[in-house]
Image (tube, rainbow, N blue to C red; front, side):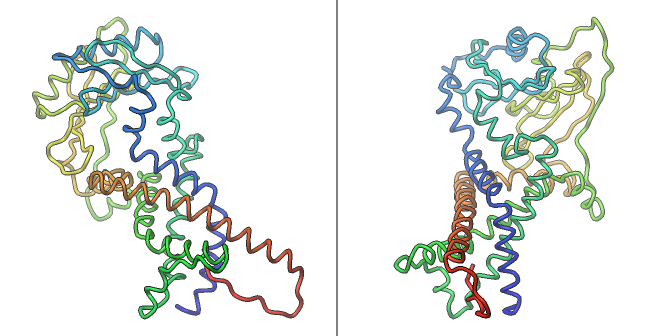
Length: 374
């Protein structure tokens, strides 16, 4: 292994330099997204509402949004766990413009409304998810994830000082120049956070190529896909009020809290997301799909009652976001995101410093260069 270290160091360095800017973006955006809901409540005070004894009907909230944006497709409604928070509706116009509308769940009035540019949290999510570049951006993020996985695995190998000098490997030297300070900080910091970065990179890659991951799991264990029901358009027909669908879902699947309603098939299918009491996974949901014309159950996907392979796939986002252990693991993911950005910036500085010194020395002939640590 010792003989491989120089080659691994060179690969580690060039992969890191190639992806440094993208990794910095991913680290900072991911760090902010961990506490996205809390941050948005601070930067958008209108999302905080005064609670009341009764809530407005869900259908009334939907009607208010559709009246404000006639002809614009509502893709989902998100119902926060907090009693003093607005319900957030996400819409997509025919030209592809995304819009978000927040509604007071007690009074049925719109408290905030704007396009994607007016909602930094949503904008940040799309940067982290796809670099604002759609499917092409998602693929780039996936490739970037493979690169991060390589860096997080090879970094500790290059860093490893041996068991007898393990303590020395975590020492940051601050009194012998900037280069040595940042190099030793880069090595020690990378070694400390490597395990978390491996998990983050692995789950990120698997989410980008989730269909392929499902296919691999099917080789060894059953895996089910989410329902994709279709309903033909019925011109002139009225739709069942959303409150009736929510009540039906609670009566048949358990009276747990409403978390989301997602619309598909041009709004003809409504998926009611109830909090699942069958799983320990944060944000696990009982998803029931209804035909909005007649209220018939056309599919369900209940977290905690799915095949093992399916549950594994669903755990990816929980692990990736740090939601699996509450505040402690969320803080750990914040540290990981900040560390990733710091390691990337530090790597760029070390490369710049190294090349600057070479230029100042000028060309050398017949003199072997001294090896430098990572």
